[in-house]
Amino acid sequence: MHSLDKNDKHILTMLQENAHQTHKEIARKLGMSLTATYERIKRLEKLRVIKKYVALVDREKVGKGLLVLCQISLKEQSHDKLKGFERSILKLEEIIECYYVAGNYDFLLKIVSENMTTYQNFVITKLSTLPNVANVQSTFIMSELKYETAIGFISEK
Image (cartoon, rainbow, N blue to C red; front, side, top):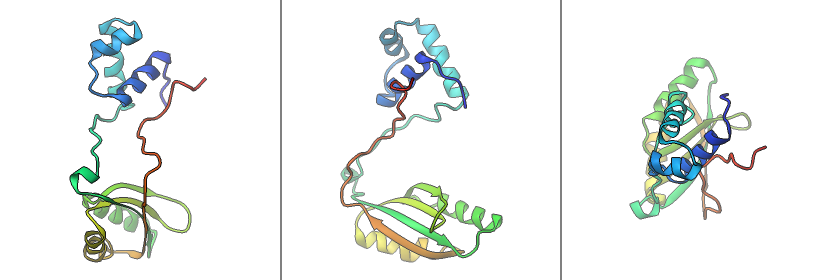
């Protein structure tokens, strides 16, 4: 864990709200010099506190209206089998998030698809055919109540 001061946290908060802000805009809002702001941002990037900059796309506007949480159980839990499954998952563009979890199943996947038919085809032709998959259970999202990617900092003491 990296030690973040108040200015680092403010910079991270601002970039999470709008990564298009220029260093000059951030410096002005914080009352810091442009050089100091630039150096802080570069340090946060170098330390991989800031992993990458992305655009959040509206799924429905690009024809990916179906959102699914999918629980996967594996037949075997050996290191080689787990790593093999992970490598396979990384190749499937329908999967936008993947978590190795503890509990009743092994992996939790977040999947986007055009509709129920294309999702069914994905499960039948890609997901369930992966080696070592024992069980696939899907939960279909009816509506999103909260969709955030930002990590909060400012309210922390």
